Length: 424
Image 1 (tube, helix red, strand yellow):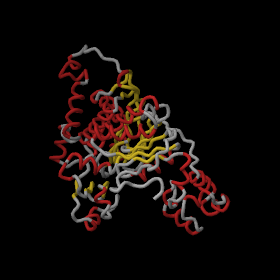
Image 2 (image 1 turned 180 degrees about the horizontal axis):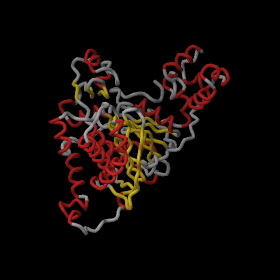
Image 3 (image 1 turned 45 degrees about the vertical axis):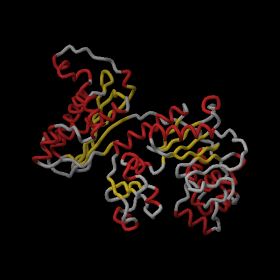
Image 4 (image 1 turned 30 degrees about the vertical axis):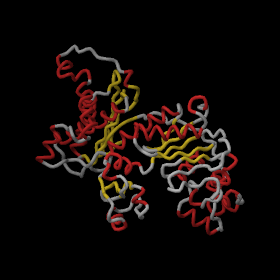
């Protein structure tokens, strides 16, 4: 079976021999069947059942569904033919985002250097943690235990000396497992794997490699570079050979903070009343400013972009005197920017409006304004309490639980003038 067998239940992949763990500094942590696992956690009646998340297309599925042939991105109708007993649930993106933040808090508690890859996976630098959480294996075990106890989900972790190998290890550790690849065993683990396991080897490249008689990663590692380059190209050949020999110098690098937060929405070509256009703009500012506050950021620049009926585009931007995250204040500036483009919009018609909040900084840097006018004191708007109350309601009851009256009136009387929001 080699040094990396699964347990009898197939859930955990680990070393069997008692040799000490070497200083392997990089962890790749990946939540198992994330969306489906959240649904099973939140609804105990789904535990142990095949679960499909999606409506029309399978966004995610549980391991029970995968075992019966269900695949992500396939039509739900097709998935139900393969697995008629599956339970189909609609996606809850707000819930998944909340859980992701909780998991990332565990990541940050585990290591000071975290590189987020997606909503459900990240690299962690485990070097220098020996006196805090133990060797890399112990650090990984502590991470998995903390995610289980604090978030209630299973997570698989791969540990290795490079990011590439750590990700390969976590993939082989699923579901709910831990795999440590020690430097002296890298070739033993990596080289027998099929070429399709290598990053960058898709269907087309796989056919080319197998046409050369190359079926394993080990055969790529020892392949003549010029021969490989003649088939897949020079740069691809170099990259594949490097990865096949686990040459991956990339460090774990925290991603730079977002430079902007925005929202945009398109709608069919045609004339729009001023009320419809203003309602759409208000909705976009509402969504974008909510994301801004959720991220703990404030902006110094507001930008509004439009696409006209002839497919031409225009945009305007305005710098604020002080950073802001307040919906009403940002909407005042957005309206002024849109007004500057209104003559052309009335002539050509609009097919898209976008709002972007830029030049971001921590919301802690915002200066408190003095309530010198009656409007500032009314209903707590000046201190942001109304925005926070609305954010809290949407967090608890869903994004559509609170909306603007102008949008409700349009939905009732004329039909919604916009397509679903597209975040940026």
